[in-house]
Structure formats: structure tokens, C-alpha cells
Image (cartoon, rainbow, N blue to C red; front, side, top):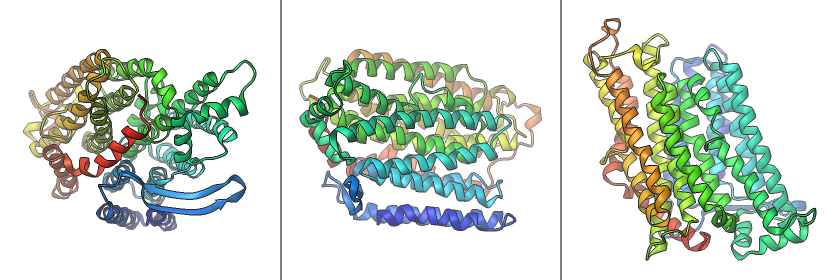
Length: 512
């Protein structure tokens, strides 16, 4: 089932790209059909998933490269299931937002990005996982380079260089792990890390040159962390993101922020923390303050922006900083509560929900930003508009729901993830958690400022004929908005399948 899930969009991309260049509408419809077929498969997997089991399900294991003792190994637990669902939802949204792009190559590359996402979220050994990690990078580069804004060339190059540098660091670190442990299996490496065997093997196989086992562990940890920090991104490795999100076409930006950025957070949870629990504990304090800097400084940068897409780009960094805060808090022992397992489970559940909720909300916001830019003849500055609520009330009302979700308004999906992160982080790391609250305050200020300047105030006479959402556009955005409302009222839709996985992750590999 999982192999078929990955193969479907990959084969669909080949079919779509084989269409003649004049068949843009057909290509878009066909690509949308393949993406919806993938969504149907994910829902089928969801229906057969047993929420009482914390381990991997739908596993596939076949011998692959015998000389490296390498198996073709797939599976999903609650975390993987949540991520493939997110990728399956965001991809058709991105295709719907790309209605003005009539090139079959574009829609085929979008499907290849989806295939890379599915492969990344289901692979259980590094070799297989890394292939799909890189596969998603290549089509994303061409989507930016060929269909982006005026600065698309330099921005695409910057995006590629940054992410490739992170990938090289990641690859070198895992080659070191393989030389020491002779396995690429995530579960086996995590078991070694939990029992302390990995440190002994590193000293035996890679020791020397004045490097102790602890130094080697920290060096490999740094390489893996760098690979994921660039993808999230974590400050100061974020400088590629604002320009990339601003120059990429709306559909591509939706994929980048809605799903691809979650690959980095997923890697922190699936790979970094289980394999390096001791290093996570040693570096918990600097990681916590790095998360605080990511949250607060990116919120301040968003407040300073006057370009709508750059504002949303920095807002995306801000919201993913809460994920890093929750992950780092799991390794902290400061101010430990009476029930540490419960607090850590709350923080971990919040991180998982924040990943999904941010992906859904951010993708929808960039869709609305793309519609504003399209209707505004390329303008997207906060000061370029004003009073749009008077001529496009439905547009402003629906985008307002997404903005309030990003703000974290109770009753919408953006609230519960952040609430759980802080619920778990405050007892475990009280001072960093308290400092991170300033990010919430600044977020409220810049989102309300956006609403005031674009939607409210006197109507700019230039926009008297600014078109409201068409019926087709309302129907297209409605499923995402309804899901945001449903998760805000009943987050157990996602917390239920996650619960056993979270409990197992907390008991099995979290330090302490």
C-alpha cells in the first residue's frame, strides 16, 4: 500500500509531463486527479490504521542491497500517518492554486514533489529515506527557477545551495554512523543510541585524532541537526526562505511551507532525537534558546515587513519555531514537573499537531496571497491596498479565518497545537517557554496590522472593482477552511491516532 502510494504521483508526474505543451488544462486536471487518488489512498490507510498500536503499521520489508545489509523498509506510525495526510491535502490545494499556469511540466513536477514527500514520510532506513529527501529538492528547484518572479534565478540557486549544504552535512554524518554501526535502519540506530551502544561503537571505529566518543557523538549530531535546521528552517539558517517564498509561484510556495518544511521537523522527531538522546540532553539549553530566538526574532521580522508574502514567510518561521521549542523541551530537566511523562507527551502531541495545523493554515494563506497578487496586477504590499472588505467581503472574511487560525484564536486549528506545546514546555523549561510567549504577542500585532491595512480603513479608489471570490474559488478553499474549523473544535480527530505513538516515543527514546 505504501509503495503504491509513493508510485502513484511519481508515475502520474511522468504521464502528465508527456502531454503536449498545448495541453495545459488537461495536464492540470489529470494532475489533480492523480493527487486526489493519492488522497484517497491515504484515507484508505487511515481507515485501516489501528490507533491503539504505537509502533509501525503497513510495514513492507524486502532485501534490497545485500552487500550493505540494506532492506527496502517502509511503514507508518501515528506521526508518519499525519504527515502523509498533510502532503496528500496540500498537493491538490497547490494544483488548484496554479490554475493560471498551463504547462504540463509544472504540474508533473508538483506530483514529483508529492512523491518525494510520501517517500520521505514512509521510509524507515536512511539510504531509502535520503533518496526521497533529495528527490523532493530537484523538482522544487525547477518549479521556482522556471515559474518564479523576477529574481527567480538567484533565489532558486540560493534555495538549492542552502538545502544541498544541509544534505551534504546530513549524508556525511550518516556515513559516520554506518561505519560505526553497519546499519542504516532508523530503529536499529535508535536502539543503539538509547542503550549507549552507539557511543562505544563510535569510539571503537572512529576514535583517534584527539576526538573522544563524546566529541564524535556531538560532531555527528551537529551534522544531522544542520541538515534538518536548514529545511525547517531554524535561525540563523533561515535566510534562503523569505526570498524563496516571495519569488516562487503561489502553488509552489504552498508546497514549500505546507509540506516540505515539515520534512525538517519530521527528521528531528524521527531521526535526530531517537538516535542522539544523550546529545539532545546535553544541548537542551542552547537548543531551547535557539528556538526562542527563532520564534521571537522571526515574529519581529514579520512585523517589519511591508510585502505580504515576505510577512507570511517570516510568520512561517515563527510558527515552526514552536515545534523546535517543544522538541528541545523534551530533553530538558529544568523545573521538572511531578508527572514528567505526561508533560512530555503534551509537548510532543503539540509539536505533531502544530506541524499539521501550520501546514494547512500557511498553505491556505499563501493561496489567498497569490489571489491578491493576481487581482492586484502583481502588487502585494500592505500599503498598496485598504478597505477591501467593502468590495470583497467573502474574500476578506475567509482569509480572515485563516489569519485568525495563524494567530492562534481558540476554536480554530492553530490554537490547540501551540497550547499543548506551551503546556508541556512550561514545566520542563519554564524560562525559555516564558520568553517564547513574546512571539505570540508580536504575532497578534502583525496579523492584526495586516487585517487593518489590507481589509479595513477607507477603500483605495483604485480597487473599487476588486473582484470577490468566484463560486469556483469558494468551493476550492472550502474544504481546508472546514477542516480548520473541525480541528479547532474537535482536535481528537488527529490526537486519537497520535496518542499511542506519542506514548511510545516518550517511553522509548526521550531522555530522562
